[in-house]
Image (cartoon, rainbow, N blue to C red; front, side):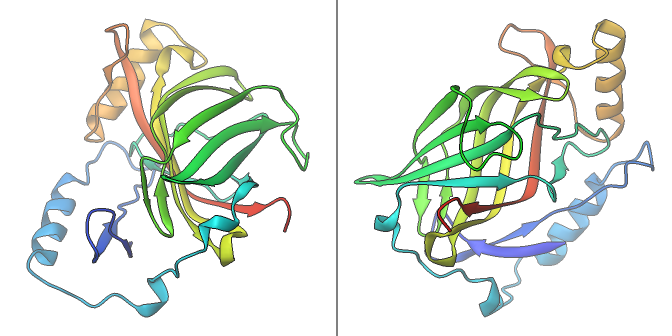
Length: 231
């Protein structure tokens, strides 16, 4: 599937293509299909639908607004062929505050079913790496998150999305980062080798972790929604 979004790098728009694989079909690769599709699109200039264009939002209204992230409809777009479920034990909250240079973002956790961050741990993501109203992208930050399988470190976590509904919601949210497969259950060299082998057959690969061991994988989840707690 494909869609349009406002380009970070120019005043125009960009086209996004998501090629979704069926995890029940393995091994296979989408590399050839992607090349064919790119060649068909190259040189064309279709007009994006007006519906896809999001209106600018008065970001000055964001004075520490907290949004509850809804992960129930999230889907994994990367890597293809190996599923790493986004199974969080706690709720995730994103606070957005308008500052002179754009948006200042903070990620925090709360007990499941809570209406506010209720766990002391939070991560200052700093001023958004990119903010082209209403689109934003956070700075990449290492964070510790609590999943149903225990604590995991997400290296270079990045949150992208768009302000929506006059600043009362966040739309088209995505979470991306790098996971260390040694944190998975079951762990161990055999399990890691099996996962990395599945990735290679799907056209992806394991990468070196910060300690130099080739046991990390880049992941991306899309389809996340969020509403302001004050709404």
